[in-house]
Amino acid sequence: MTSPKPQQATILSFVRDLPNICSLAGLLCAVLGIYFAVLGNFPAAIIGMIWATLFDWGDGIIARRMKGRTNEFQAFGGQLDSLIDIVSFGVLPALILLSYGEFSPLFLPGAFLIVAACAIRLSYFNLFGLNDDSSYIGMAVDNNGIILAFVFLFESVLNHTFFSVVTYITVVAMAALNVAPIRTPKFTGRWVYVLTAYVFGLTAIYGWMLLRR
Image (cartoon, rainbow, N blue to C red; front, top):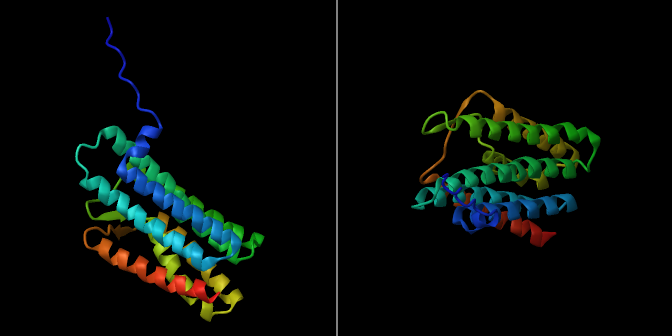
């Protein structure tokens, strides 16, 4: 007589997991960023993107500190995190590029490259993981949000045409770094405080820009 098959977890049961809730909060920020990017409200789009970055770091920290988390929840969380990262650091930067380029077809190659590189980079990471305990192969995709948010600080001091070229070059460069066969450091420990300060600082700056609009 065969033993009964263990009951499979329901889809929504994984939403009760605190790291997954944090991941979904990041997805909400990314969706808001996409919304504002389409509207051409770039300060608001950047705020959404940098908060998506902070939540992306936060879900990993919470997951590592939780005790008794099952293998199922760990595996599900890893898949969810990767899928959300594609939206936050691939699709959102692509939409910012396209919108800033007034949706010209000339900007489509750059938009495709950042989304494709993000998908390839995350697929590679899901297969091979870290290069060692402290480094990745290729630039981690969450750096896309950090870099693009910094570059957009100069948007108000450069003319639109020139800055659209700068944005295009930045996005293509990030895509190249995402898939480059180079070692990049894994920022952990106290770096989360640096990122938190960076996010709050840029939120204040871009919030001030919104008030001036």
